[in-house]
Amino acid sequence: MDRYHVITFGCQMNKHDSERIAGLLETRGLAPARSVEDADVIVFNTCCVRENADERLLGQVASLKSLKTGGRPDVLIAVGGCIGQRDGATITERLPHVDVVFGTHNIDALPALLDAAERGRPAVQVLDGSETFASDLPSRREHPWHAWVPITVGCDNYCTYCIVPYVRGRERSRPIEDIRTEVDGLVADGVREITLLGQNVNSYGRDRYGTPRFADVLDAVATSGVERVRFATSHPKDLSDEVIAVMAERSSVCRQLHLPVQSGSDAVLRAMNRRYTREHYLGLVDRLRTAMPDIALSTDVIVGFPGETDADFEQTLDLFRSVRYDQAFTFIYSPREGTPAATLPDPVPRSVTQERFDRLIEIVQASAHEASRRLLGTRQRILIEGPSKRDERMLTGRTASGKVVHVGVDAGSLAAEKAGELMDVRITDAQTWFLLGEPIA
Ligand code: SAH
Ligand code: SF4
Ligand code: F3S
Image (cartoon, rainbow, N blue to C red; front, side, top):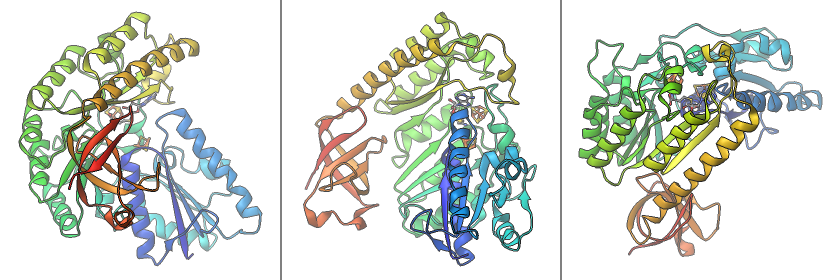
């Protein structure tokens, strides 16, 4: 075992976990491989939130079988993450060329499981819960200037469509002292941007006698000396005025909020067990925009939840027209075995869902383009992420509001070392999903 390759599916929590997986393997002396073909250990960190995520994994793992039969029988294949947690040993039954299966609660067991597999022993281990946080493990960050910092793990909300509570376990909050210590270390290490993570960061502390709360954690991180702080995800039922106040007061907290709405219909929200109303959600948007007129809002929405009528869907369209999101992740409902919604009657026919989906996308694109155009001519500070993939004479960065900006620079300024630096630019062109800018001297 010399070289490893980690393939990550799913959400930001999985991206974070993959950095810990890489960190653990490097502590054991492994180095990153240049490609899958070049690796001795291939780890899949998986997602099962929707059916297509499931299928993509199975397809990719299956295609690796030829690697093993085609001359590299010693390659070790490990499957972890949410599918590992959900399916356990049935994975090695279905896919006998998989050597190791681990779950979301025992990332730290991976090196020992790989050792066992190398010696030809069965290496499947999935736990019901965990006491440790993956964030206490060594890390190899994908970008030196950015760090994910989980503040909670798990989820207790049980939205009726969602598999996450079953594969990530009960919600647990990390002690604020541990968060502080990690953040101080990251700042000392040159990290410019921190993203606080949790399935619902706003319920931070509920399992720890209620104090400190998320507003306190956000304030502590915002005043740590880090340039930019983001956080995800916010559940609308738990977003407090205190959090909005910290966002407005602290300049390091990015004026950007991801606030998943899921549906604009009260009847559907009730069936989803979201525990807020359309009115409550729109009230939050008002309060956010009153406190921060320039805040960029994004959301998640599910189209075609069982029983969703035309009138329900019109309510979603109407909400989108009135909020005018900067960005939205639109999903077609996907039944997940074991969740309450999977047994509901009245599935929405595929053709109807598709038509609704297309209508919604049109509104999302229009409001995203409008949000971009509002920045035309303005001065923006971007955090440079590296050379642009669009044009080799450009650098790519992001505004505090999360918008991608490509900036033309002279050849001497293109060096990859620019990643992590801040640059002031004037916005010269606004497309739906990106902006163009020029440096301001
Ligand atoms: N904890 C976060 C993210 C959960 S998963 C939150 O609460 O917002 C990310 C998104 O996937 C969800 O917001 C939801 O829009 C979508 N999603 C979850 N389960 C789904 C399902 N069964 N079908 C379609 N979309 C789903
Ligand atoms: Fe899933 Fe709801 Fe928990 Fe988000 S809050 S992870 S959608 S159960
Ligand atoms: Fe997917 Fe697991 Fe995240 S199911 S969305 S990777 S918590």
